[in-house]
Structures are given as structure tokens and as C-alpha cells.
Length: 316
Image 1 (cartoon, rainbow, N blue to C red):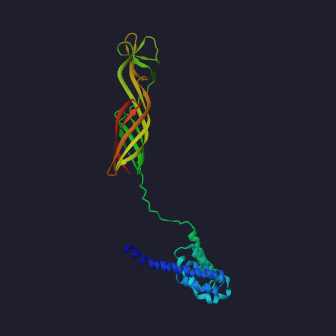
Image 2 (spheres, one colour):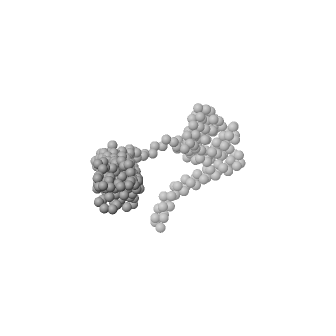
Image 3 (cartoon, rainbow, N blue to C red):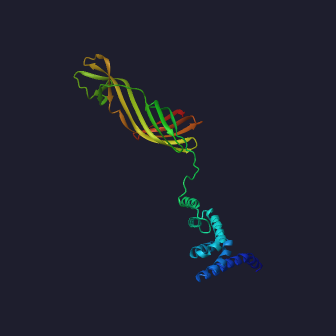
């Protein structure tokens, strides 16, 4: 109960002020209905002392309705203009409209087109959406590029290039065994009969046999591309796909029917041992000191053969 009494005492001044505001506006409105502008002006002047918006609006209406009262209203209308100026500087668009009207029509002041145009400009700016608002942004991280050596057991010579961004990157990779063998013949080159003889489909000569020397060569070419995703600081995981081609060649000599061996050897591509198809890469790349990198992973050929791979290089 004691707390309720204290709260009532604290709110009492606010209640009295609200009642007082209601009283002078109510009395002024009653006089306005009777068109008793002198009495209405008396009550609204009390409201203008508190910059009451309703009082300011009603006094403005009196100024417009009865020109004979304007001389006696100069002081109070000047006070209205001061109140509106305070509201206008707080970006009150309704107050700015009234100030423009005051300066354009000379309400409570001398007509001033310059001031009216100034406030028109302020009102126009207030109506426009805000522009050129500075929104802090994180600086964009420049993509870093890299290049280096990459190899696997079947293709020990290769290069890799690519780029590493803030979150993702890319790479291109080419590898080979640098063993290139041209062949005049190709087809089914398989052991036939005894003494390591070969059967070559493209050759069918009477009284001539083809004997393998036991030597063979592989020509391997691999190319792939993929994306890199940063897993954590300085470490990327990558996955990609590409194409690989292996040409398998066998060396042979011609043996006459009398058993003599022709001196020149030849090569034939073995289509059964040659193959090509899709290659899939899966790797991890670690950036060292921001300037070097090391890659370890594996490549799967034809969804059957898996070979490890490594790479090192520079980041720039």
C-alpha cells in the first residue's frame, strides 16, 4: 500500500500536466467551434508555450481564417515558427511542411522564398531513401596461384597449376612417363606356339614367324582438372576427374622358315594390354609458410587401378 501511494505521488505531476494540456486545448477547440477566435487564441497561446502541436495547428488555422487578428498574433506565431523549427531539425516531415507554408505565405513572418526553398530541399532529402551508406566489409582475399611438379609411379613426370581462394580453388594436372614409341603394327599381339612366338593380326606372311624379344614399352599420358575446398587453415582437400591413355608395345623380330633371324627388330602395339578411360583424383594440399605447397593423394584409373601421387611447388 505504501509503495502504491509513493507511485501515485510520483505520477501526480504528469497527470496534472496532461489534464492541463487537455484543458487548454479543449477550451480552445470549444471557442473555435463558436468562431470566437480571440478566446481560442488565448487558450492556444498557453499550448504554444509548451510547443503543443495541436495548439500550433489551430493558431495557424486562425491566422488563415481571420486576417484582422494577424497583427495581434505576430508574437505567438513567431513562437509557433520557433517550435516548428525545433521539430524540423529532428527530421519531422510534417513540421517541415508547415515551415515551408509559413515562409511561402508569410504566416507569422515575412515571406521568404529562399528559406522556403531551403526547407523544400530538406524535405526532398528526407523523402529519398538513404544512399551512400558505408557498410564495413571484410577485405576480399586475393586468389593465390600455384605451380609445381606432380607425379605418380606410372607417370613420374608432370606439372600442376591452379589457384587457391579464400574458400575454394581449382587445379589442372598433366602427367606422363615420357616414353614414346611409334609402332607400324597393332592388333592382337599375344604369345603363340613355343619359343616366345607372337601372333600379329596385321601380319600374315608365309614361312615367316614373329618372335618376341621380351622387351616392351608403355606410353602413358594423363590429364585431369578439379576443385579445391579449404578444410582448415592452410589445408585444402581436392577432387577431380580426367582422362588417361596407356599404349603398350612389344618388340619382335622376324624368323624365316629356315630358322634365320632377320637383323632388324620391329614394334607392334598390343591392343589387349593397352587401355584408356576415366581417371579420378583425390588429394590433400598443405600450404607451407604461404609460399610453398605439398600435395599427397591418389589417382584411380578406369575405376580399377589405384596409384599414389605426390606434388610440390610454389605459391605466388
